[in-house]
Every structure is written in structure tokens, then in C-alpha cells.
Length: 171
Image (cartoon, rainbow, N blue to C red; front, side):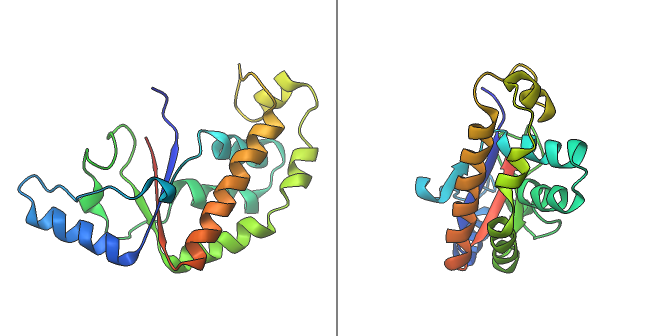
């Protein structure tokens, strides 16, 4: 099974219930299980877009935004989620984006000029894949990046509108 970018929208109250569950459980189980409609598997698209913006376009603002989206913010006091019930332990544990951070990110994603970025991708599919760090990718790179960027932006917008946190990890 391939590792992919994962997101979960959760309320601060749900986060506190997980914390309490982990504290009350002998095995420190946080009782993790957000509804499927509040989770998103973004594959590796955002990492490819980040790679392209940083290495090919030199766009440091886009790189910082996409890094924050894919890596979360430091701190967050969510060490109790460092548990096999939440993620497989291959990469670092989930990181938290607070409701305020989610709101900022949602706004930035809405303002991101994706069409302008995608217009600069090489037209040759193999060259476009390599430019995004996807050597060997089969398919339409532009459509792939557009699809996952759009669903991620929509996911963050819904979280911001509901005052939710977002947890970020690779699994």
C-alpha cells in the first residue's frame, strides 16, 4: 500500500474527547474515528505541486503555503494521537492546524492561482510528470493536480466555515 497525504476535519470538542480517551485508556487509545466525510486522502498531488512550485517556478510563497497544508503547524499538543489507532507510524505523527490556521489556509488556497501554475507545466506528459517529481507517472498530470488541489481547497473551506481543526499526516 502506498503512502499518501491524509487530512481529517475535527472539532475542538472531538479532539478533547480523543485526548480524554487516551488518558483513560490503559493502551492510550484515543478513540479515533472521524466520519469518512471528514477525511481526505489527497494521494501525492499536493507534494508534486509543491515540488513544481519550489523547484521549477521558484515560488517560495506557494511552497510555504503547500508545506503548511501538507505538514501542519508545529506544536498543537496532540502527542496523544501518536498511536496505531490513528496512523501507521511510518512517517511522523499527525500535526494539528487550529481553526484559525485552517481559516487562513482556506483563504490562501482560494486565492492560489492554480490555473496560472498549471499553464506553465510542460505540455509533454512525461516532462510534466518529471517536473512534479512524479517520474513514471501515467496519465494527465494537470488533471491530477487540479483534481486534488480542488478537493483539498473545498475540504479546508468546509472546515473553516464550521470552525474545525484539520489534522495532517502521511499514511
